[in-house]
Amino acid sequence: MRWRYRDTVLALCTLAFFATMVGRLAISPVVPIITAEFAVSNSVVGVALTGMWMAYFASQFPSGILADRFGERPIILVAIGGTAVASVFLALAPVFALFVVGTVVLGGVAGLHYSVATTLLTRTYDEIGTAIGVHNSGGPAAGLIAPPIAAWIGVRYGWRPAVAIGAAMAVPVFVLFAWRVRPTEPRRPDQPMAERFQLEAVLELLSRPRIAFPICLAIAGAFVWQATASFLPSFLVEHRGQSTELAGLVFGGYFVVQAITQVGVGAASDRYGRDVATASCMVLAAAGFALLIAVPGTVAIVAAVILVGTGLGWGAALLPRFMDVLSETERGAGFGLIRTVYGFVGALGSVATGLLADLFGWGFAFGVLGGLLVLVFVALAANWALSLGY
Image 1 (cartoon, rainbow, N blue to C red):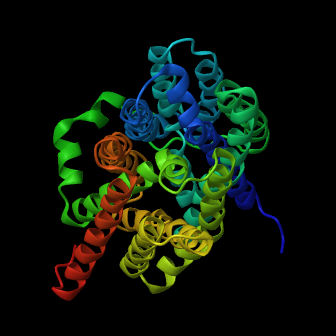
Image 2 (cartoon, helix red, strand yellow):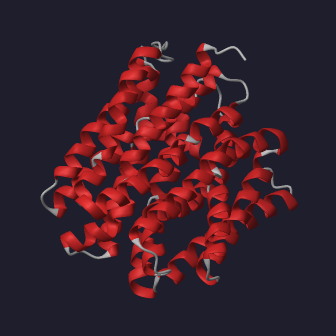
């Protein structure tokens, strides 16, 4: 096959997503070490992680507006470079309050990437489900690399060098992206950005039934994804009695599965429909959580990782649904707005799961996550069975 420029764009957007995700995922494997050093609870660390993910999603809408005004390339470069700087700041935080500030800053700058890169790929590819699936695999690939390395470094050298790997990954990707990706033509270079934040226009877009319904589904899915990304290693250590290093490897395995299956999930959504692929993801992930909670043994863990890893790749199936109903001129800021709404609310998954774990134990907390996925499946089934058209 002949390598084309659009393949370069897809590859480097995927690497950029990889780099921005490494900075965030390097924290989770060393949460037990962080809680011990700062003498804080799981729920308090959950507040910091929720702040990071909320900032990540809050910046999605402004990122789309900025890309419409200045083009996608500079916004993605700011996201990659900002991730490097924020990772260093986080690693140097002397007190927990500054650690929280560092996580929020990290989330905010990293959040500039996803919506803008997705819009760039939509302008470049016709089969957007497959392209988005490839791009989304950058996140799970980061999960393959970051957790085992961060866990190993954390046990031997402390959590600070562990979280600093975000900068080590981001710098070379920043250089590659700046070198190989061409500037893009802004969609709305002359429109005042203040006009894009008008409440009436925002509410009009969000209230469309074919957007509002999948946003609700995405909120539940994002809630579960954020909680899993924040606390799966802690669950494995405290509920299943694994070592920190082994939990980091299993966490990495979860992302390996997601990296491998993302493209297939996206391709399935192109071929069989967005709802069928999304519903299938929910069933697989819910079954995986049941295995994690209730079934002992290594085989159960392996099966659960495969099921949860595949199912929580639902984004490659559900997110193209939004692009299908947005006009070309709406896709930049519109998709960013949608990401901000569902992701900002879904980010509560970290703090809520940490609190539930402190109050009722990890088994109950992860059971709630599985129950949310079942509710999403039921909603999709009802929409299909009753021909509601959402």
